[in-house]
Image (cartoon, rainbow, N blue to C red):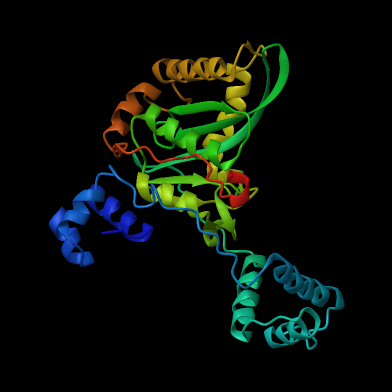
Length: 327
């Protein structure tokens, strides 16, 4: 039986929380064999799913037209002469030959207005329970690769309870690197926390921000497989992920000074991996009673196991091939 990502996520998280396969199957109304197939993450329902383009009725041009209407209202400052959803729809029909339904425009207007609103600020805890969260972030650094001065992008992760760290370098902070960085991080930590705290980078978020952020489809599928919750903080709010933002600077100052000279990015990443292991085994965070190593060993018991099936982080590109080129 093929299942959707939401159900897959429910199965994975419920199984990790201790619910039996029989109970999960009964609650979701599916076969126990289906639960058995997916509960340990040995398979992913989208592993071989072809990419399907779904442009929808609301194109980027229409979105921009709606946003232009909003901006015009702001410039005029006339409370009683603002664009309503119906007026925007009428203008689209008249000026852009729009053929979709009025209800479609109403939904788009409501959604875009919501994205422009400032959401309430989330209150972040001052302390964390073991296995509760990992904070992740990107940073930049300069190195010499094969004698060429090169800017690299540092993927940084930190366990919020033990403060154990993970740093790896990538040539680009794209989605493939973002997902691969997390996979390597889970390997390094030998487990996965209940949630990941991150900001609103385009590699993770399709639209919205903070608690209203809508994840990219592939990241949603990735998080379902590795059974963690997504926790997007508000842009520019450093206190929401201060542990990992401190790590970005720490890694530059302590791991990349003097500026490394390496033959390849793989060599650089081996140095960073070894530096993180050294940090775990020898470091003690100021104002904490125990070493990072001791706290990591305690936290390790609360991390969920890394699933057997390794999620495909590569980018799928669909192209059209003309038959005459094959002759």
